[in-house]
Length: 86
Length: 156
Image (cartoon, rainbow over all chains, first blue to last red; front, side, top):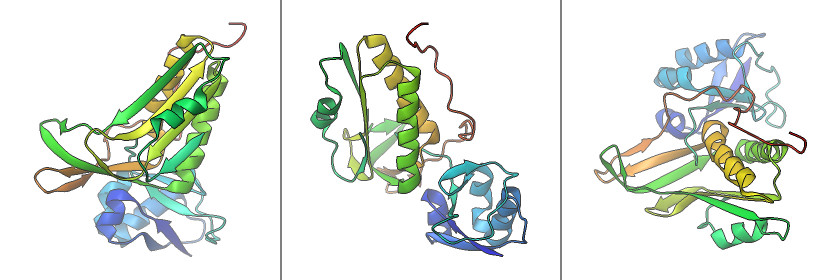
């Protein structure tokens, strides 16, 4: 399956894009997604190790499943590098 | 009141929003743009956010603060976009009947905002470089919100 991952801050800067497309096998976990991002977009490998993943605006753990249906209304995936608001 | 804005923060409005005759204390925290950080000189800051999730997390923090402390009202405004030196990036207003709750809740809100809310700061340094700030030692935001030193509920 193909999923889209929204990018922010340094990740957006490094990729030169607001989102990237990632190829994943069905049943992939968030950990698999991390590995796939690093493999398919090597420039993002380092920041991905330090980033959280959010699905539908909630932080998810590495063993969470990546939703198969990536209808933007239902399962938006975002790479959240360490935050620095405030 | 929870707001993300590209406009300068209206601190008087933040105070108005939390003022109440039920309050004996009003606390206002401002995060402001500092000129020097570890010897490097800042010209300006640029803030970016994942707006939908940032608003959601700010609302969750706000609700949690009202759970943990006796508060009359809260207001959180975070600025997005370019900021100059001395300008406020964030304002947190808290009112309560007694000051301990307002002080503790205000501190907890800014401390937790800085760990959990998807907002990022980019430093525009005086040497012409720009750098996104991604702190290396953050606790995982996936855990329940961090504990506070002390919170007080009615019959404690």
